[in-house]
Length: 89
Image 1 (cartoon, rainbow, N blue to C red):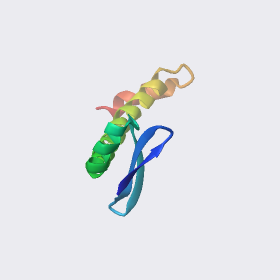
Image 2 (image 1 turned 30 degrees about the horizontal axis):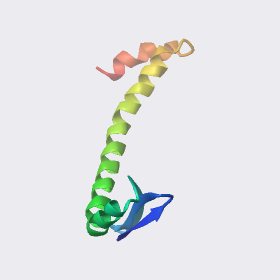
Image 3 (image 1 turned 180 degrees about the vertical axis):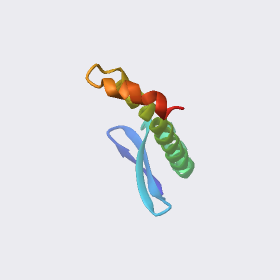
């Protein structure tokens, strides 16, 4: 695990559970930020991975509901509107 500067931004990288990650912290590469990330790169990487996994899980369920709603409201699929009440019963 470690950190790298790319284009004046700080990135953390490392392998967690057999998978390699390289993620941007979004912070600029100032001398103060570099000293801080040198000490805390492991914790920052684990936090970014956890946030990324939470976002992926929360996006999946509402997206399916949105897709079903969009299908039901389209004028080209009137049969779907008749079928949807049976799906949610």
